[in-house]
Image (cartoon, rainbow, N blue to C red; front, top):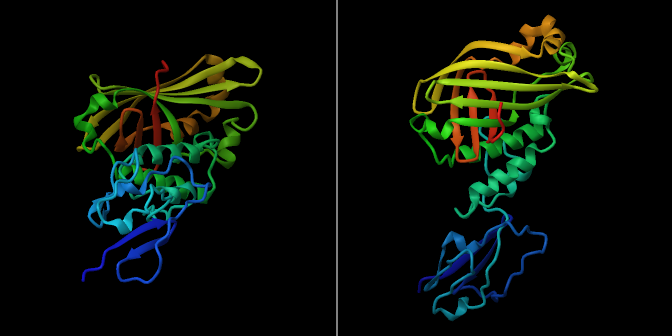
Length: 297
């Protein structure tokens, strides 16, 4: 006689019910510490006897086989462990993701990604290696579910204003000191306006000085882009300006250093884009995570 079995993954453990097993079936209650955002095991739509686990929003539907009627909607925190590929195994929240369901997975990954980058000041002044690996793992999971695999064929989705959330570009050590970015000048928002019809992009990096409003201003970098492949654009530097003049005077001696950090020239691969988030990788190995913004540059 064929063996009927159902297995539920829960943090690396499995509970099995078999027609040939002498063990007693019993309800399993998940610890209260599991977050409510985790999704039902039912969403995996696993075959169970004559029934099918279904309807992840409502619960579990069990078929006519009476030996499975003790089952109740259950949650799982993790079914499989992901891998970041380039920088090693995913760490931290990347390993808490539910891989067993398509429902809400992208939103869940994005939520964990925002949690991971919170408080890092866009990563510009450095990120611990473990945290960087964690972010890379989450990025790769989003990239694997990119809803727009041919972004350059959908440039209208790319156009508009974007705000930088995180990047692997860093200003460290003597560079940070020379630019006065330790105690004197603060970095504000990083914005990017993309004008699809003109093939132009304008990057704006805002600055402010503590107690000196006359030094509040911005570096604006104009660039041109052209489509190079279904997911890549080539970028050419056009010009840059710093306003007001008082801020330019602060950076004048190290202007080439500042421009070298933020110059976008090269190519950019758009590896993920939806209505609210865009991820890219450039020819220098940098990763950029941006969110759509209504802010005017």
